Length: 493
Image (cartoon, rainbow, N blue to C red; front, side, top):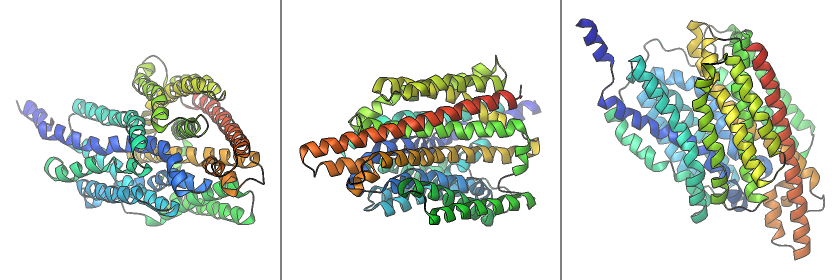
C-alpha cells in the first residue's frame, strides 16, 4: 500500500499537463523562428539594404549568442529559479521581438536579434528542467519529453506557412510579431500552472569562460564574413588570429577548472566526439541548405514568400519521418551503423540539389532532411550515454550548445561561401549594391534601362547559382566525412 501511494504521489496530474501546454509555447516559437526569418530575408534586404555580411549577421547572430550562453543560463536558472528565469526570458524575447519588427536599420536589427539570442538562451534550459521536475514518473516523463520535442517540429512545419501568409500581406517585420501572443499567454499562466524549482547546490557562473567562448566564435566568424565580402585584408587576418587566441585561452581555462563550461576531456571519448560532431555538422548542413534554398526560390526563381514556404513543406514532412523513424532504426542496427545509413541517404539528396532546378531541389532537400534527421534523432542519446554518468548533465549541455552552434555556423559559412562566389561572378563595373547581394542587384536593375537590367540580373543570378552549387558540394563532402566518422568511431550498442 505504501509503495502504491508513493507511486501515485510522483505521477503528474492535470496541473502538470496544463503546464506542459504552457511550456510548449516557447518551443513552438523557437521552431518557427528560423524558417520564418529565412523567408523574410529577401523582403528585409530590399527595405533595409544590408550588406552581405550584415544579412548573415541578422540571420545567425541569434544562434551564436544562444550557443555562448546556453550552459550558463542553465546555472542561472538553478540559482534564481527556473520559472523566474523562464518568465524573464519570455518578457525579454517579447520586447526584443517588437524591437526587431520595427527596426529601421540593419544595425538595429542585428542588435535586436542578439537580444533575442540572449532571451532565447533562457528558454531552452528553463523549459526542459521544469519539465523534468514536473514529471517524476519515468513513463510520464518520456511522454512529456516526446510531446515537448514534437512541438519543435510543429513550429518548423508551421513556420513556412505562417511566414509565407504574413509576408504576402504585411511587411517583413510581421514575422517577428508571431511570438507576441503566445508569450503573453505564457507570462500570464506560468505563475499559475508552473511550479518554481531551484537547485540548492548550483554551480558557479563563469562569466570569463562565456566571454572567451563568445569572443572566439564571433571574431572568427566576423573575419570569414568580411573576407568573403571584401577579400583578404590584414585587418581580417588579425581579427581571425585574435579569435583563435581567445579560443586557446578558453581551452586552457576549461582544463584547469573543476566545473568547466565545456568539459574538453569528454572529447577523448571517440563515440562522444563523433556523435557531437555528427549533431553539430548535420545541423550545419540542414540550416545552410534550408537558408540558401529559400533565398534561391525567391531571388532566382522569382517565387513569392508563400510559394517558397509551401515548397519547403516536403522537407519538413520527411524531417518528421526521420525524427520518428530514428528510434525504430536503432532497434535493428547499432547506433553507429544507423547514423552512417542516415548520412548515406542524405548524400544523393544533396547531389540532386546541385542541379539547381526547382523539382530536384525540393526532392533532394526532402531526401537530405530525411537522412540527417534520422541521425539527429540518435545523436543526443549517444552523446549523453557515451559520457560518464556523473558528467551526463555536462554532456547534455554540450549537445544543446552544439545544436545552436551548428545551425549558426551553417548559415554563416555557407552564406559567406556563396557571397565570395557571387562577388567574383558579378562584373566589377556593376553598382556596388549589386556586387554585394543579389537583392541589391535586383534593386539596382529597377533603375537601369531594359537590356542593361536584364544583363545584370542574368549575370547576378548565374553567379548566385554558382555559389549555391559550391555550397551544396561542400555540404555533401561534410556529410560523407561524417558518415565515415560515425561508422568507425561510434561503437555504442
